Length: 380
Ligand code: A3P
Ligand code: MG
Ligand code: MG
Image (cartoon, rainbow, N blue to C red; front, side, top):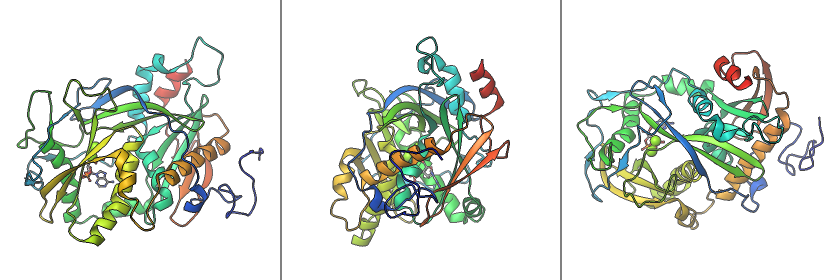
């Protein structure tokens, strides 16, 4: 194994994040200075329409319309008769991002400049959602993950693989849970308009095939990242700052009436909300707090930059620096192990709560995820 200056192999997991067994996810290891994380820059966007077709434009962008502070939105309305649910048995992997990359290659590649084995000038390509899972890993006690990594022309592509446990949970969802998953989308419909000058249409159909995605470039320490994330809506003020600073993330959450509920909200919900929006530089979350019947009783705005102050009084709470340092070490670990540049080789990284991250290597297997159309076009 090549010698890596930051790491030493050996059975001392208490000292080194990378032991001979894998990568530690223990919080104490990552309580260091906040790593360099450059302001994310939007380099493009794409849209997925009501039939999940890809468009290299912003046609699915929506505009935020501020609701009353106490709006009484009924989130159950339309679940039975005005809901088209995306087929989540279709595993899209990185395909939409790869389509975007092919359509925008000139913005990324260094062809014609200094000779480089790296066709894209980025170290990692992935979904924002996969990075969110990495950020929250040191605090996750329930759900593990599987991430497939392929090195191709110098860039590392990271794509999620569904775990057995996640598939079981999906198959065993209760009818109540199924309906509650609709509530978040219904809240979006109450607060978003299709055009700058129009109003939300709560009488319309909620179709979860539709999406608007931003593509951002940034750097975490020495890792150059290109990732995409779904964006709920933007500020409709024409004088609002440029993307991603004008974007708004929408969330729903159970209303808070006891100190215990407040503490759980800070310790678990705000961690997920912070990680998801901090990564692409989305500055605020608008939250609808709903009762048990799915009625939104209050709406509040959470600026992402204030979340770390909000949680400071919480005992034993999560820390942004731990999240970012773990993600950074994970990416170093991936660079270190995924050495063979080959589109049909997958390094499968797996993690279960209370364990280290481990990996296995797979050639021409069920895990290969870079499609032929992408490999061929990129090799030309
Ligand atoms: P909430 O955010 O109000 O929970 P997002 O917030 O990321 O834009 O996602 C929109 C909605 O999709 C969520 O609304 C929730 O209803 C649903 N959703 C997203 N991720 C989910 C997950 N992992 N499991 C279940 N529902 C999910
Ligand atoms: Mg969303
Ligand atoms: Mg949302």
